[in-house]
Length: 567
DNA sequence: CACGGGTGCGCG
DNA sequence: AAAGCGCGCACCCGTG
Image (cartoon, rainbow, N blue to C red; front, side, top):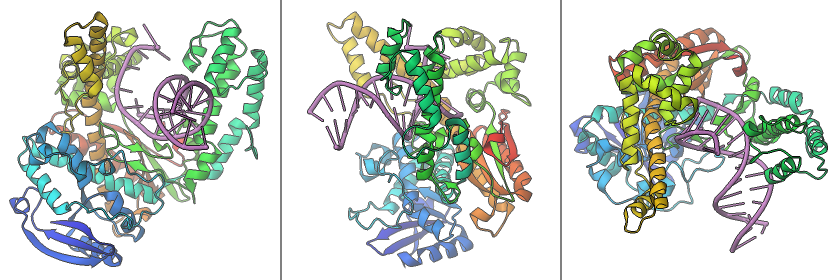
């Protein structure tokens, strides 16, 4: 059963119940079962009651507009449809290309405010259930839902698309739940880590260690007024000291021999830590022992999550020791091993590559086939294949990979060629890449028009190859993101089953997600079971994407007290 | 003073 | 231009 929620004015909600599962034609015909009007204040109780009875799939315009308030009232829902996220997928997917939804002119569901990129409050501590200031007419969620159902029914691959939409919607629930629970984070441990690296927190100005390093840099370069934070100033000072250098990037500085280099590199590293994840960051983002970033499901073209504020997806290794389990609890830190190459094996039905990863490290398995001599070579060659490297070590090793795994390499090569022609790439479950933009178009027309110059042609070729590298990577990255969503959705259900009847934060629950990595916070006695659930969910995700094709998705699941202890 | 592009680096 | 994908964020610096 589906229940479509729609706000009516300031204080009431319409709930329309539709009988029939997602692929039932009764739904597509819009068979309305019944309709209730609920006051905003009664909504949590209404949802809780229906959830206990029938576990409907809740259909709403935007999970962020509904779920945080429900969670605050300790109401969890099992399944949902996030119309905004699903709309974006169906609009762009080649699998629903002819549908009314896809061919309609842009509407309210396509507006910037409705997209994943825009309209996100920077720090929504508590989103109101309704935005009272927003008096725009809300587009009908029921009408949109029926359009989506129609697009799905007419699709060439309805099963894949339905799975993708369910996984995407589950991701939105998980993001809200993770924000609600927060990542256990010790401000005290964070302060200790910073103090150990930078010196104690200064009342104002730079910490002592940075101040000393800046002084060392200035004296080594004989530049008493140098601002080490200004790349142009640093570059000029280095050149004045006789060094041949064209930027202040760390990798370039590392090759230089000069007394200023070591303090400069250390300064840059520590300065980065201070500005990105220093005391101010902790003051802003850590409250009551929890780090609560704003995740943005579907925020990346490939379907990966983004984050807005807090930089949750860039938490540097240096401070991971501050991520600590509560007393009596454990962290289960899990990581999918060689996820993207394994996905590529599945996408390409490459039996040989799948076999190379069966029961072992995939890169070691590639070495065992004799394609390359060492693990590091296997890794760099695979990355080169998936990113489109043409030169360097990676470019040199690629042909050997193509020889050993022709199917896998052919798949990414074809995705690249298609992108170069301006075509669209589509993931395993049906997320499609955006068409190339205006820059691509104008470069191509400039090169093919009358009087085009050699420079125009070079430019067109370069733009075209750039886009090819994007579509090449898109098929792998987008499919990996789908796998990860399926993994988490499956895991979310299994974790709830480990402690039936308890609220999310009293049971094992997800607290962190980083593309191919998750952290579960679990009562110590349930941590081993949670770790087993992580592993089993990964296997299930593989089956959801690739059926019986024998590609494995092993995960490492470490039961630890601190994030820093894992791997 | 605000804004936006460029730089550089954190993560996968 | 690190050899190649996807991001977010802080800072500098030129421009309006």
